[in-house]
Image (cartoon, rainbow, N blue to C red):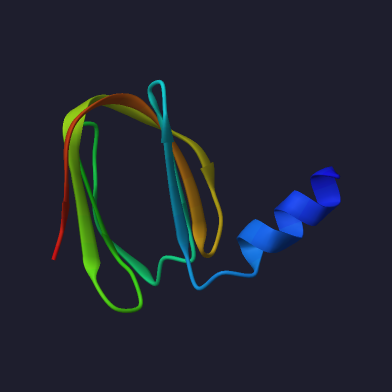
Length: 77
């Protein structure tokens, strides 16, 4: 069952998950800003900007990021 759910999620152009104080973004193109108060990423068709504090990167790969911290605001451009 886990494999089926994972295949479903990872078959999308992108996905963004937000729960508790975690933010998971899959299929970003590039990182514009990455610090403890601001994260700005370029996606295929838009840009995402996340403001908050105490951001910590728990996982970072070529196109996937997992962030822990207090998220105050999320904007899409």
